[in-house]
Image 1 (cartoon, rainbow, N blue to C red):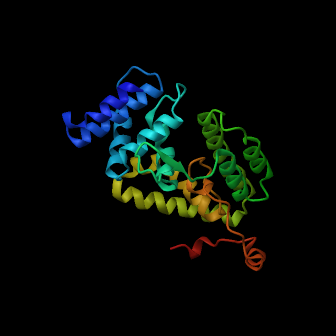
Image 2: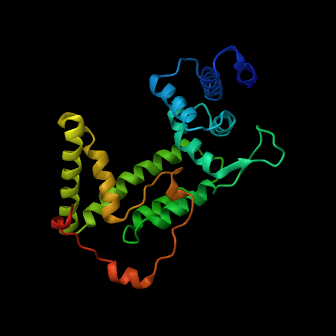
Image 3: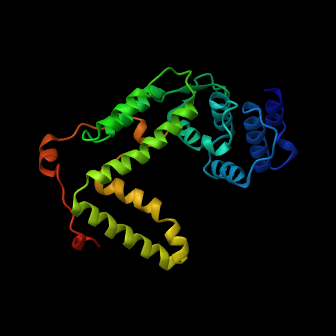
Length: 243
């Protein structure tokens, strides 16, 4: 869009930070056909990108390539920008507007995630492969579906866990909440309990994080040593061994 390009070319009118934020804001509003101001959270997202050293042209290229009118918030692009930062390189032409994709396709990402799901949860694996479709599909809808499957994965895996595993999970969650409570107070710590519980569930039950633009989607899982699989296929956890 011409308005966004004009703003990019005129960064000298304000500070570098202001120019970065203005260019991202205008491009986002242009590609999503919105007329509004950014929220505080959206402005914080821009500040995070700049603080992380993510180049402006990479952010704008991601917005233009992935943006459409059904995306309501700039925060939706956080994973896409982080992923592009890892898997894109500048084209040999040196043109900052031209970037070469090197990452997996949407279908490949879905298959990578499916391959990481434990084999005793075929319903989650099958649901991920069923999402495989053409590149013209609604990426935001696929992201939302994968997020929902991640919640199903956690619930299903916990339901299949042994009593010892569940006891270990609860012991670790209680310990993590207690540690956080000493730093920020019990009220704040309790609000973070669901997030900490999900992280501990993944660690104890060896579960992937199902995010379409997350690290687990970038490549298939490494092959396992069958001897180790046989030895540790049914691990038990003694809460008394926890630190």
